[in-house]
Length: 141
Image (tube, rainbow, N blue to C red):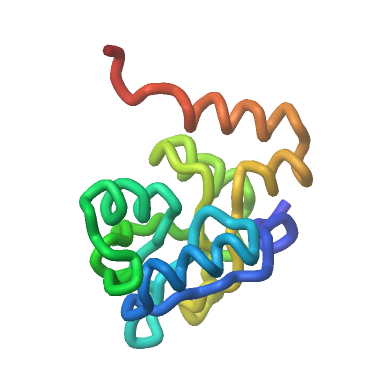
């Protein structure tokens, strides 16, 4: 099964120059917890609701003046739409991530693949197995 057959195709990108207030409004409107960030027409990072809370709000930054680029996660794991879904599952498990940005052959973001997408299309057992691997601690406490 190819990633393009399973991914969520609607991708709301946000500019690195947008405010985190604007990003939070988009997240609320679209009921999502993350937004791919673009800068200069290219994928520059990923902004999560967790980034907003920990890197902005908890740090006392003003959401109306703080730019997305200041608090986003800069390293973004991506996959290609024409790859087999098993490649994305391997990346999710290895990197302990719950969603991955999907690119086309021109490196444009065309979707997001989440554990929910995998569970809905590839089977509950597979989705549960991925979640177990992603959620397992990197090291014991």
